[in-house]
Length: 227
Figure 1: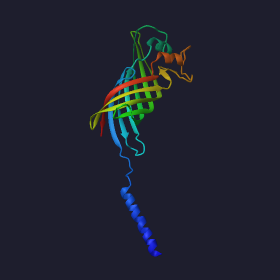
Figure 2 (figure 1 turned 90 degrees about the vertical axis):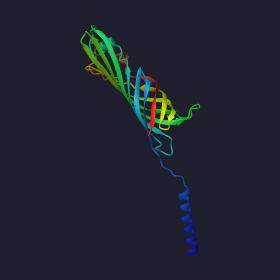
Figure 3 (figure 1 turned 90 degrees about the horizontal axis):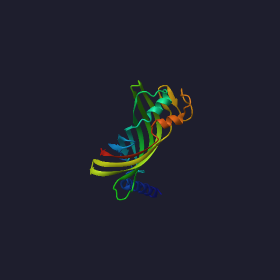
């Protein structure tokens, strides 16, 4: 009986040793990359990003963090002045706008035509818009700001240049949710909780006068570097 028990124990140990030697190694091998993109956003813009991939052996998913900047039209100067400041019309109007945005993207590889590497992208966005309005000769200068959450998706492909560098072509679409528009001491909110609104004006009027992000098509190109 003891011999039988000893034989069983030996066989179990041998089988475990063989399994340990032949079982696949299941662990992730994270890889880092970084890059930049420049191209058409609302007018012209660009972003820098960092990506971590291969952090899971089960799902071929990558995560990317991006910081972007773009220039844009601020909106309609005369309407913005009337809705946020006063009814004066003197001075020569000038306007300019800029957008800073933060992006978190989840990236999944797909098969797209005959491309060797193509990805679909999806994730949240956060933008910070500033529209600057000047009335030269009218002594009127003011900013209108809006901070908005959004969501975006897109496609990208990588064309190899070297083992550590590739050329990236990306196209996407972003949608931003409405948020408060603030300028001087006045703010208009989508929920109607306005602060010092000018008489007879509401959020829809401010929304029409200011060119804060609503939706955005993006076509960009740049370089990606693998580490």
